[in-house]
Length: 284
Image (cartoon, rainbow, N blue to C red; front, side, top):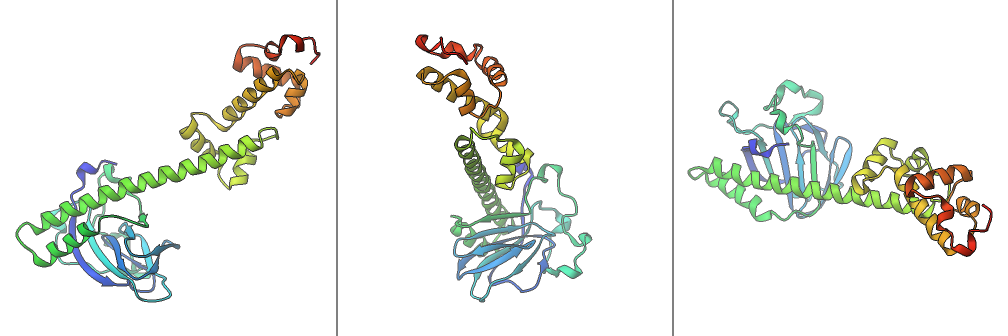
């Protein structure tokens, strides 16, 4: 995603009490920033809790609706295009009911390929740009010279900060998921773990699970599990308290030959090389 191309055109900026009930679609992009009250906005059947300082971006063509129990949200709301084009500049555009929506209604029929990475939804529970949001409202209402340019520049700053915060949040979430998987593997390393069994435990697809671990550790699940088992085996062997076969069993290998092969492949030495001298007489 290349944000250099982004040059927002703020079509409408206002203070808004709630949003309509019933599923609706914006033909341009929408941002809502809550300044008071609480509620809930559902986007594509996923509910988002709204409270003061909550930020919600909804990409054009994406259904959303007010699913709050009460009507006490006060929002700063913005309708805009990502790319300011002369032919698109004009009066504010209202939403349409989802049942009446057609894709040919979209203002930006085709965005640049460089902007395909803009997500359908960006949700930030505590965003710090309240003053910038308010400045856009003031610029839009006063309509001083160059107000369009000023509104666009301020909104681009908001978008960049929101996308950055969103990416940091996703990275943190993925890290937490990865750490949970690694903790599970370390706790159950002596059991017959497989990609399928671990993925099922966390309700993930096997490919997604391996992508998480690869990104966080540089290893696939199989590689991480094998290295953890062998490192544990080395500690047990060096203690001199167990035979090679006992160590193999303790770390989850049912066959000593398989254990010995994996051990030598990873360390370059057979398991017996790590036994203390007095223990090397023990038969595996």
